[in-house]
Every structure is written in C-alpha cells, then in structure tokens.
Image (tube, rainbow, N blue to C red; front, side, top):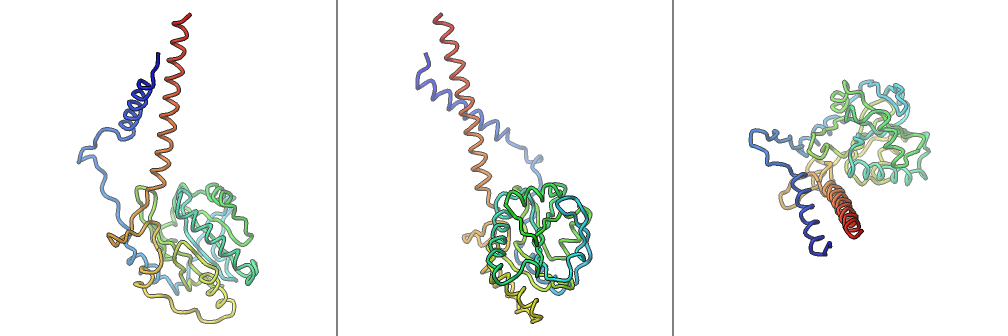
Length: 282
C-alpha cells in the first residue's frame, strides 16, 4: 500500500535526483570557461555618440523573404534603425513593443510614408530571415514602413561599428546598447535615442525636425544618459553601481520545467505502483 509519507519521500528523492542531474558534478578549476567580457556603459555610449554625423556605408541586408535590401534603397526619407537578436526573451521584445507603441502614438502627426523603420538582427546564424519574420509575427508588427532585416554574418561587425552599436556576449545571450539610430534622408546618422521605453516625443522630435529641415537639438552628455536612461540590455544594480544581466525569467522557466518533469515522474510512479497492487489483489 502506498502511504502519504512514502509518496512524499519518493517525491523528495525524485526532486533531489533531478537537482543533481541539472547541476551535474562540480567542475574542476581548469575546466571552467574564461569569464565573459562585461559591457562598459560609458565606453559603449562613447562609441555610440562618436557615430553621430557619420555617413553610413551602403550595406546589403536580407529581408524576411531572404531578398537583398541595400541601405541606399531606404534613402530619400528619414530612417529609424534598431538592433535586436531574436533569441532575447526579455528586453528586445519589450523594447520592440515599446517602439511599436511609440510609432502608433506618432501616427496622428506623421504619415507612414514619411519615414521608414528597420530592426536588424545581429546574432548570426540565429537571426536568419526566417527568424526575423517569426519575431515580427510573434509581436504582431505589421506596419507597412517597418521591416525586419537580417545582417549577413560577414558584415555584422562592420555594420554595428558603423552605427555605433556595441554589444557583448553573456551567459544569457547578449548585453547591448538599447538605442534607435535616427538617419536622415541622405543616409547620415544624425541622432541616437536611448532606452527601452521609447516615447512618441523622443522619437517624433528628431523626425519632425528632419522633415522640416531644422537643426536637431543637442544630445545629452554621457553622464546624463548613464544616470537617466537605461542603456544596456541588463539590470542596473544601485547597490554596486553597475549593470548586471537578469536571469530571473530564465530561472523561472527552468524551475517550471523541472517541476513539471518532477510531477510527471511522480504520477508515473504512482500509476505503476497502483497497477502492481491491482495485480497482487487478483
């Protein structure tokens, strides 16, 4: 007969065993991988700001159907450019939705034919045209002036440097600048808008000035940007005064999967035990 105590004992033993399987044996010091580089917010912003005023080279990217698209094809009207990676499960989707909401709010003051928007996938080979298409569909981006482009692997480094977009690999994906580059009709990068919570005012003001052929307002200083705006795809820790990657969601997902596996295993053991008892009673 299976008692409540035996069930609890079995479940606890099962969870302990799953924990050991997930954690694995302790790694030796000589097996530990080298620490990943930490993205410095100030240095990244300095590179980003240095790109302002740059005439962008004519890169060839791939659209969601795998067709080549040159940056020069998008000249003739202002262009908003941001960089994402489709494997991001937290900040890139959030900033993409924030950008979509800002564009929707701007629709009263701008016609969609007056400017274009492109989101560029920089993590290759994962950010293929098919992955960019799936990302756009998942987040319901269907604006006629917004495209999702895949950057071929050989040009990623040059392309991101050209836009002043800085990123670094982390254990959870990539840490990168949260920025939207504003490009004028002639293909010159004229401003950077930072943060993961874009607003219609922050994006609309440089567009409005470009369309009216007016000078753009001066950018904030590096110190002001670091202090006032979240610029990295990570979490700012006020205790240490630094940015760190947030693993909370990853741990929640892993914990949920582990719990589900444990429960399935537990019920399977219960089912087998009951079958055994029924056979003994016959």
